[in-house]
Every structure is written in structure tokens, then in C-alpha cells.
Image 1 (tube, rainbow, N blue to C red):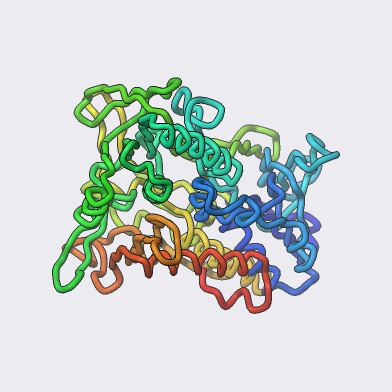
Image 2: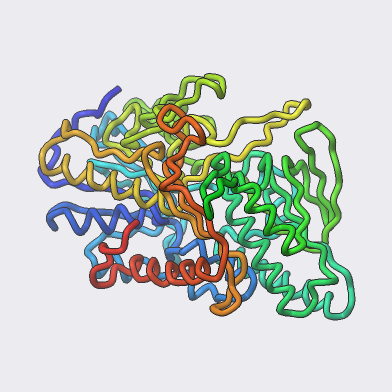
Length: 496
């Protein structure tokens, strides 16, 4: 379809950014830093606060408060000259309407006193950084409105902390408790967050002096421990090549955590869940406390053409994520390639629309796809959060900056997950003297077996270490990224 002409377009540009998470907030701050003030940067977010999500796991065990992981957006944007609308985007009209051919997006305001008021914003460039919809509905009974807890948002984590405190109180009274932590669906992502929460809970139980009365179970859709949705890692440590599976399993043995892998949760009930494993067998597991992550979907956005016809399926994958410059051809695992992954995050249909971070539709998983004899898919979805989201967002901002300055045919900047490295620090217990964390680096995120035939990754850029130093790094990153999110002096010197 191409990028529609903007009849009567002003020489001044308006960039509208949907979402104010890591990707959206990063793109907004960089664009405002780079663009002359006559160009407008607009952020739309249903939430009033920015959330440093990696630290929600510490809120979930009572180590931090919600105030320590939330930052009000309006004061930051007011100070930086960014227009902010607290609202939920509902409809994209990339060709405008017959009455007004300018591309536009409709949003429903969510701020107090204006709730449900509909606002229409025209745009020259649109960044869909809406991130994920927490799809608790994919598993009956999953989530805070059902029978399990979550740490996906700051408020969810706070609720989980209260429930955990009640469990610890029962343990102190001598009542044995079973705690189940992990993924609540066979296609979940963010296994790292479940891993982190498991070991923070384990340390909290030890510190409370009740560990011996608690049965701690890690329930995951990973084929083996250490997969983390990236098909695992192999790295050299002390002259020996080892896998993230061996490395992770040793921690589970050391801490006495039982692991159930290859699992898809069919239903969560009051004190009991039903799950299936890859061999097709179904099991039930009773619990006193469960924190299970939901699968992700794209935000509920509708797309209409100029005549008002629904073109949502043209722009978005069935998962609700935006189709970008990836190879979405269905093909067997053996034919998957690093080249399948997007570079520019431009919409296939409309090149003035971008989707960095979780909002883009991945071409396929990173981990090997697997299905049970019953036809149940049990395989992690690819992670696209944290460091990769920030890098993608900055790359998209660079493209828009250059196109505003030199024209829409200017070559886009690229940042493929198949040529991008990432670092991940997964907390395994907080505390400046007795904390621990698993620090991992990988290059690239998406394995490239054509370039690195043995493991798919460059061994020089792939590493793993567990220890107190990793916790110090994670603790430091918390404050560095809070500083960066506040856009305080020289914030841009802190890497994505």
C-alpha cells in the first residue's frame, strides 16, 4: 500500500508514540533530544507512570515499594517539551479518512475527570510501542482476578508480596506450604522473570527461618532449565564449555527447588492447577501460593483504511503484534534463518509506522518449537524486552530523525536481534552482602548458525556467571535506569 500522501501536510512533523514503557519512553526522549523544537513529539499511554519492570520482582517479595519502581510521566514530559496524553489507543487510520487524508490514531482518555473521552491525533510518523497485553484469559483461572498472582505490574507485585507475607506467617505457625512459581501457559515468554522471582522467594523464606517447611516448585514451559526462551546458551568458563542448562540446574539443586519443565497450564483453580507436559500426560498440582506469568498478546488495536474498511489483519499478525520487515513465511525449524528477523521495524504496509520492542510480530520462536501428542504447543515465545527494546527504540528514533531532516526515502537504520547482543542480570536473591544474581551476555540474541555453526553464538560475546557481583550490577542498573528514565542531566550517556 505504501505511505499515503499527506494532503496539505505542514513542513513541521508530528511523531506520535503509543506506549511509554522501555521502548516508547526511550524513543520519545531521543527524538525530543534530536529534533528541532518546531517538530512535535507526542506520547500516548494509558498509565500515568513509567515502571522499571525488572525491579518488580523485588516489590513482589517486599524488598521494594511501588514508589521505588514507578515514575510519574507528566512532569518529565512537561520539562522536556513532549506532549503527553494519558489514554488508550484504540484505532489506527493509516490512510486517514475520506474527509481528512492525514493518518491518524484514535485514543480513549484514561486520566481522571476525562475518562472515555475520545481524542483523534493526526501524525506524520507513528511508533507503536504498546508492548504486551497480559493475556491472563488464555488460561482459565490465571492471574490476580483468578487464583494466582503476578509480578508483571507494580500493583500486581505488591499484591503478590502481601500474599507471600501471609504464606510466611503460616509457615511460622508450623503449617507446611507449597509455593508454585513459573509460567501459566505453554507459549509464555519472560521465563527469566519467573526464575528471578523463584529465587528471591527462596531467599525470603530462608531469611524468615521457614525454608525447611516450604516446598518450592518452579513450573515452566522451557524444554530444559536454562532455555530462557533463547534456546539456551553455551559459554566457556574456566577453560570448560558448559551450557546454561548445567549452570541453572546446579542452582536449583543448591537451593532445593523442584523443577517441572515442558509444562502447559490448562487451568488454575483455588489451590490447585492442571497442567500437561510434552509427552501428553496431564497432571494436577496443589499449591498454597502460585505466581504464574501470563502469555502476551498485542494491544487491542483496530486498523481502518480510508473508506473505513477493517485492515487489521493486513497490518497485524493473529497475535495482535504489528507486522514489520521480517520474513513471515511459514517454514520448518531447520529452515529458520537469522535473516528472518526484522532490521528496521517498519510496517510492511505503511513505512511511516514502526513497532520496536514487544510490539513487533516475531517471525518465529528462538527456541525449537515443540508440540505434545495432543496438539498443545509448549515452547517459549521469544523475549524482546529490556536491552533489545531500548536498542530498537533508539534505532527507530534515528530513522525518523533522519527522514524528517532529509526526506522519507532516507535509508532506515537497522538493529536486528540476529546481529544484536544483550546482557541480562537475573536476580537470585537480594541483599548487598548475601544477594546473588545470574549475569548473562549473549551475542547475538537470535542464534546465527551460518556464522557460528557450533552454538549459533559468538563465544567471545556469550558468558554466564552467578554470584554476589551480579546482584551488585542489577542493583546498580536499577538506579541507573531510574535516573535515565527521569531524563536527568546526561541521561543519554547511559547505554540502552
